[in-house]
Structures are given as C-alpha cells and as structure tokens.
Length: 452
Image (cartoon, rainbow, N blue to C red; front, side):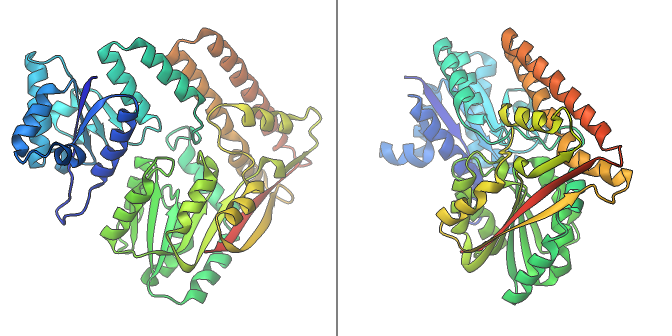
C-alpha cells in the first residue's frame, strides 16, 4: 500500500480549525477510500500513541511516496510545521534522494505562493474535479494505469453541478443584464422581509453572489442595519465582490463551493470569523440550478437560518418560454439540445423548487412567476433579452469540444463538433428573430419564498 503525506495548517492564530484542515480532511477520506495509506496528522498522530511528534513526522516523511500540500494562503503554507514538512520533502525530491511526488492543493493564484510551489504541479480548490485530478496525478506517478481509467470512467458517470464558468465569454456583463431584467420584483419583496423583521443587525447569506452587482442593488441601501456574507465557488467572483464593497464595513465574501462535501463546516468557520450567529435571510439568485443536488443544498441551508428566517430563491425553467413566429421550432431545438448536453445547469429547476422546499421542511412556501417579454421593447432591449436567454448556451457545447479534444476521443470529438455547430447555427437564427419588431418572445422567472 502506497503512503501519502498531507501537509496542512491545523489551527489558526485563535485556536480554531482552519479551512485547510477541513479541505485536507475531505481529501484524506477520499484517498483512504481508494486504498491509500494517508498520513493525516489530526488522526495519525493520535492513532500512533507516539509522544515524539518530530520523530513521528520525520518517519512519515521518509515513508511517503507522495506529499500533498493543502493550503488556503501563503501564510498558512509557510507556518512553522507546515513549511518544515513540505520543504524537507521538496528538497529530497529535487536532490534525487527520493522519487516521490510533490504537489500542492491550493486556494487562489499559484503565483501568490513560494517559488518551490510555483515550480511544481498544483491543483486549485476551485476545480470541481480536484480530488479526481489529484488521484489521477498520483496514479500516473505510481504507474497505476487501470486505476486511471477507473477514475476517468467514474468522473464521467458521476453527477456533478454544471460546468458553468464565470470567466467564459462575456459572463460578467451578461450577469448584469440578467440582474436588470429579472430582479425588478426582488427589491419590493426583500425590502418588506427586511423591514418586517426589524432586527439590527439583519444577517444575510448571498449564495452565488458573483461580483456583487445584484447584492449592491438590493442590499446596500440597508448597509447600516445588515451584515451580508456573499459566497461563490469562483475566486474571481470573490475578488470582484470584495473590490466592489471595499468601502463597506458590513459586506463580506468567502469562496465556497456548495457542491463539495463539508461545505457546511467551511461556512461555519467563515461565520465565526465575522461574528455571524445565524442568517435571517438566505438569498439564492440563479444559483441553485447550477448545483449537482439542489435539494440537498436547500435542506442544508435551512440549518443556517434562525427560527423564523426566510429563504428567497430565484430560478429558471426552460419550459416557461414561448416564441412566435418560430416556424422551424428553433426555440424547441435549442432547449432540447441544452437539456441533453453534458455540464449544463438544471434547465427545469423552476418546477421543482416547491417540492424541494417542502421536502426540506420549510413552511409558508410561496411561488411567484413574473414575465419578461419583447412587447413594446426597443431593438436594444430585445437584444438584451436575447443575450440573457440564449447567447451563453453555446459556451457549454464549446466546452465539450475542448474536453473531447483534451481527452483525444476522436469519435466523441466529431459528435461534439457537430452539436456545437448546430447550436451556434440555431442561436444565430434566433438572434435574427429578435431584430424583427413583429417577433414575440416571453419567459417567466420563478421566485420562491419560504420560512424555516
């Protein structure tokens, strides 16, 4: 059995468990499930019964076939014991004393870390397939070809959240368009919820906060009376959010992937650091349909609400769209193709949200539908509606082409290329529809409000 050493900072300066610890703990569980002998100090030191910590660490390092540094920032990876562990192993690899594998599992930009780490392989916390990627690297190093194929097959089969990327296309601006088109009803409803509660401070969790554009529109006017924690899986979103609210004391951001096991523990850590005991409002705007298991996330979020707290969900459903004239059923073609492509978000989440809330134990559930259409709109306004509903869809098909090219799967690549060409052609034809003032298009936004 091969030995893997996990190097990470256990406690922060206040004696609390770090996010590095929780990330390493999940990696430990994952790797032990794949029959590796993993040295995870939080468990391995206690299990050994050895009181000589230095000797125990040195023995584990000597036996390690692989060392994985798990770190959320520069300071954590250069703290005393962590630096001792990975730097010693790194030097032995570089000198040829060991043929072990040294790799990093880090948060943020690798260029913000020490030179030794920048020069070696690194996996990002934001990678949705991070654990499988690490496992594949290990198996490649150890020559386990059969295991590598099993990983590939399992990753392909496993249900995941959407492959949505904040950096793909002009997504930043599209999200602003989406907010302007779809959030006009949010303001009055949310203002009423916040005003009725009359709490100071009023705690809000913004799930999938993106750059904070919508957060600012809806919540900044309450700044003195609220505390907002925005969470998003993308580091760039968190950086943009923090920049947007750099002059505000009551808006916080934390990178968090709600598709990853153990995210609840990470959220508790973030709340403790800020001093948030619970949330009075959980706000989910166009984020839950990207989750691999939105029902599980909704259920888990309930535990973070105060006793009479609210959850507010805005989501979508491709079944609530209509177009006329559309003689070749291009709308239907695009919807059907979108539904079937790998990595797409749940395009029919709107019809599921009531059941998900009810089954999770929420009460006083209210579902509302608001329409957005082209009637009476200028050409520019119709263009914005088109971009919000259609322009992004080809990104998922382009991603599939990239994945098949990367995997060198010729047959799948040909099929992916044909699907990409077909969706691009359909979207371009629909774009021409929107330039015709006689063309009518309408879609409905689904909003759900419930209490714990």
